Image (cartoon, rainbow, N blue to C red; front, side, top):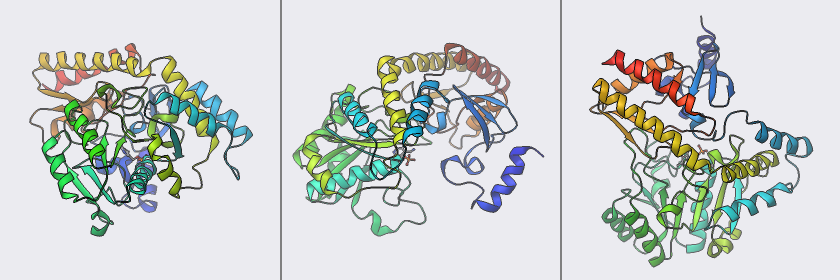
Length: 402
Ligand code: PMP
């Protein structure tokens, strides 16, 4: 029996459903995907059978510059050897806040936490504290974390937890305006994603006219524009993901990649939200952990000095162009959507992802870790040679499937 199988059997006794959440290979991934991993380095992962994969999920986002990055590991280890947690934060928290704020143009203050869940919740509380109102608009189908207020359809959340939320359709100005109307004077904030990155759907870049309308409506109703940059942050821009659209949020929520995999999330806010944020009590036992902050300082430096979003764009475009040509040659209609740095690859007329799962199952045997219906992630550890190796594999698989 394989080691993965043995671990699954043991896991089935100790984890409800065998494994929980977004890493439940049982529930989510096609045939042949490993549940457990043993090693990670650069853009590669090794499963517990020592099979090697070029990884296009990057731990679902946190890995931005490469697993085991020597400079980031060194920065985190050096800090950990001095102090990681204590009765007050370490000096690095100030340095990190200053650095992050100077990099993100709307930001005048920062709060640090652990997960994207924390960031979106803090951002929402800050918006409500400033407005002295309660309604938050969220896009239909958008993911902002697994906590009950945003995990709306899940068993375990109560209807009353959703009473203060109204949904709109992303990129649809009419539906946004209607949702504002329905808020009936109680609007505290409009939460938006970096782009429409709902799982299982073709992705949509943000329509600039929509983004500007969100800003206008927030200004008109004295409500906060909250940008959830947890998933896309630092991959599309060194500033917020909406900076290229010329629209500034009041509050931005960050997580995943900001410390290249060390556990850290953050909320950044503009001056007019400072007092409101100061009035809200938010905290967590591990939110002040210094080693991930040292890792984040190093991550931000590397991202800026090397223009990482641009670099990822080059790699992503190469992958997209290559796949497009192969699909044409082999007679497949593929739908590649979202920014090239975070590619989503689906097949036309494949509602149940049958074709997509088949494609991915065969790729996993070729040592390529793709996802059939979730956006994927490029990293700075991927090289042109990795993309070439990937395209050789996709070519072989598409030839077999055609
Ligand atoms: N917002 C977005 C856009 C996300 O993609 C995620 C996680 N996938 C979250 C919030 C929640 O982050 P976390 O899982 O770190 O709590």
